[in-house]
Amino acid sequence: MFLNILYLFIGLALLVVGGEFLVRSSVALSFRLKLSRMVIGLTVVSFATSAPELLVSLQAALDGLSDISLGNVVGSNIANIGLVLGITALIGPLAIDKDFYKLNWPVMVVLSFVLYLFLNNDDVLSTTEGAILLLSLCVYLFILIRNARKFSTTVTDEVDDTLQQTSNFKIGIWLLIGGAALFFGSELLVNGAEAIAIVMGVSEGVIAVTLIAVGTSVPELAASVIAALKQEKAISLGNLIGSNIFNIASVLGITAIVQPIAIKDETLMDTNIFWMLGFAIILLPLAFIPKRMELGRIKGLFIFGAYCVFIALVFVK
Image (cartoon, rainbow, N blue to C red):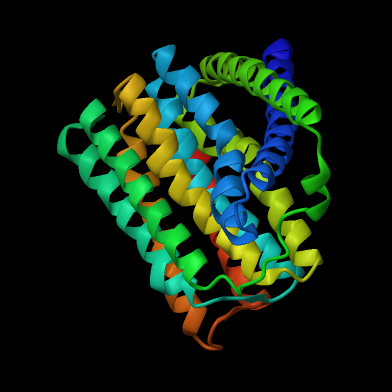
């Protein structure tokens, strides 16, 4: 048991390190490709911070542990809002920009419902359905980039300007370190999680929506807390919404294309996915009531409290 827990934590540590190096190298490479800072903030950073989820889900699916693949994404999306957004709002009120309710929130909610419909149909996320999710991401990115260019005066402080000076050699080294850490971290994490689930007598899905989901959400937590401390408030929310969109459309999309995902743990569809939908939907009324376009500390406490209830119910059941 101790060895399995050690594997789990080493795997999580490698995912955090790998994710950090991948974010740095991706942002530096994006500057070289002359992408705008807004595009980098809402696409490159979101994709890079979703890399741990992608590697874990792919590894689990290839190992035949589909509940970890799905539970990882469902749990991460819940954690991004309940845990990460809740803690970020507790640090300081979050200002919300118009893109939240005009594009990012609707896309996240629609994709969440589409995922539910795909899975509820036959308890399998097929290759075709995975391709549809991935295609929807391409459409979203097209609209996002078009809007960013249309309003090119928009300034974002999310990305680190010092990365503009990064050499090609350093970018290559960072990519190698990030890729290797993510690969070995995902393997250790999946193997450790499977063994712990067996010892504890719970399903892989329970471990996936709790321990693994929190672990793979660490990059989002770090990015959002740092942004909040630096007063980059709208970007914190944008990063989280973007990551949830990428988790569904790219992580599950790519994973299903490689290996269709079949549901084994009924709790994922009976309970957990409804929590994911609930956390996604509740953001809109919270954005307008009682104070418009702001997520204050009370709202943050409410969201975080709901997440604690979710975690408690997962283990009680």
